Length: 366
Image (tube, rainbow, N blue to C red):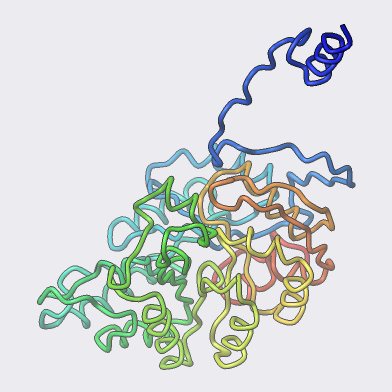
C-alpha cells in the first residue's frame, strides 16, 4: 500500500496525471520575432521637426508632371520647407521639372541635375558632358547628383568599369566648382554587403530579405577600393564642394569620418538612410555633431513621410530604447542625441542654405 501511495505521489508531482496537456510553443523565424519592450521610460513621439528643415536627399522621379500639392501637404505636416530632388535628370527633363515647380510652388523645391554616362570614352564625350551641365544649371539646376552606378555599373566605350576618380570626369567636377554648385555623391553601399553572409554579419537579415544587395570582392570591386576612389576624387578637386551621401558609409566609424573631414575641408556629409547607426551610439554621435556642426546636412533618401519621425526623435530628444522603422535594416533600438537648438538649426537648414544655391532664405528664421 505504501508503495502504491508513493508511486501515486511521484506521478502527481511530476505532472503526468491530473494535468492538461500544454500546447507546443509555436516555431518562429528570427525575422518574425519582434518583442514589445516592457521598459517604461519617457517618450517624446516627434512627428513634426522642431525647426523648419531642408531635406537635401530626396527622389521625385516624376516631378515634371507630378501633382505637387499632395507633396506639399505632406511636407508641411513634417515642417519641411524645402525638398531637394536629386533625380532631376538632364536636358529637357530638367527644364520641364524646373518650369513645373515655378508654376506651382516656386520656392519649395530645389532640383539637382544628373550626368548621362553613356558613351564615356568616345571623342568629345567629356566636353559634351560639361556643356550639358552648364546648360542644366542655366535652366535651373542647383547641384549635381552622382548615383552609385558610377563605380558600380558605369562602363566606358571599351566595356571597362569607370572608376569614381576617372580622369575623364575631372572637368565635370572642376566645372561644378566654377559654377559654385555642390556635388552630392553616393559611392558603394554599407561594408557588410561585401562580407560573408553568416552569423557574424549584422546586415544578415537585410541581405537575406534583399539578396540583390549582396556584393562580392569583385562585384564590381572591393568596398575599400570604391571608397578610396571617392576620397581621391575629393582630394583632387579642393575647390568643389562634395556632399558625401549616407555619411560616406562611415556612420558606424565616426572617428574615421572625422579624420576624413579634418583632411578634406571641401567635404560635407548627410545622413540619409543611416540614422540607425547614429541612434545606437548617442553619446559619440552627439559629440560628433557638435564638433562638426557646420559639416552636416539633413537627408532622408526615400520618401516615406511616416519614417521622418525616427530622424526627428534621434536628433531632438533624449529618449531611450525605441525601435527603428525597418527591422530588416536595423534590429537594434535607438537612443536620442538631444542636440542643442543651435546645432539643430545648422543641421536642419543653415548649412544647406550656405552650401546649396538659390534656396529661399525667407522661409527660415534668421
